[in-house]
Amino acid sequence: MFLCCMKTVKDVYVACKDGLKPWYDEQEINSITTLLLNDITGLNKARLKAFPETALITDQELQIEDAIAKLKTGMPLQYVLGTAEFYGLTFKVNPSVLIPRPETEELVVWIIDTVKQSGLKAGCILDIGTGSGCIPIALKKHLPAFEVTSIDISADALQTARENAELNQVEVDFVNADILQPDTSNLINGPFDIIVSNPPYVTLDDKKQMHVNVVDFEPHTALFVPEEDPLIFYRHIANFANLHLKPGGKLFFEINESSGEETLQLLNNKQFINGELRKDFRDKDRMIRAGIGS
Image (cartoon, helix red, strand yellow):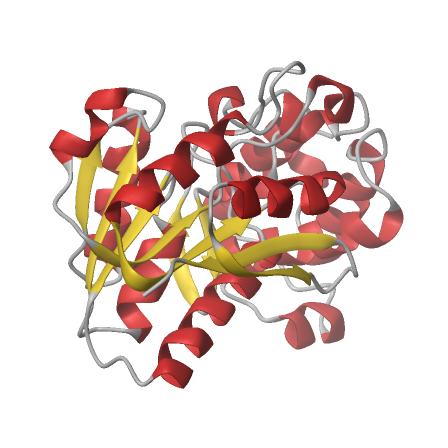
């Protein structure tokens, strides 16, 4: 699609419909186009729909042409725009971090509800494998009296997370650490009232079913686990939590939908109590909460 062919809002919808067919269905293409136009022109969905002949200025044409070229490679829209929404907040995203998912929002809601129901007014939270920082930043925003610490193995991810904390005006302590290494305990101040993690959990078999715009663009170290040991991160985090959770503390996980009962059993074997498996909005096993004895 040449630049001269995209003079109006309607032209952009036509260009996206033609160019993005290999990657998305028609409904997804319309949604992506609307978000793209909203970001670049500032026009909301109602105005885009009501006034399809609205003319684009030259700079907008150039931005949209560049964006469509990237989208046609399979690059996710959030990476093209450089931002993603999570729990009402805006986050910078790039290929060094996973794009925040709505399922993870549900995990954050569960943690906030648990804290409020417990009556705990302040304390310490640790997030393991922070990526963009969406979990700890959202928690700090809604539980401001808590001290929040986050770790990640990726220096690039941590830089993005720090920028997101500044963007959302919260203080989170970000630490470069690998939960699989035994010296991690020396890098983090505890103990913690809550430990939460959305660790890598995608198996190579799962990979075969995934959309190419995830496999080709999102960071593999944040996604995939060895086929022969898919619960490696859950086991190491559970061991860490046994040592660093306060009596009565809670451990929260996002999980692979096919490993819910197996992950619960792992926690039971490590003496965690009151394990609970919860489904996400798609009715898939997606998160676990478990406690440690008083």
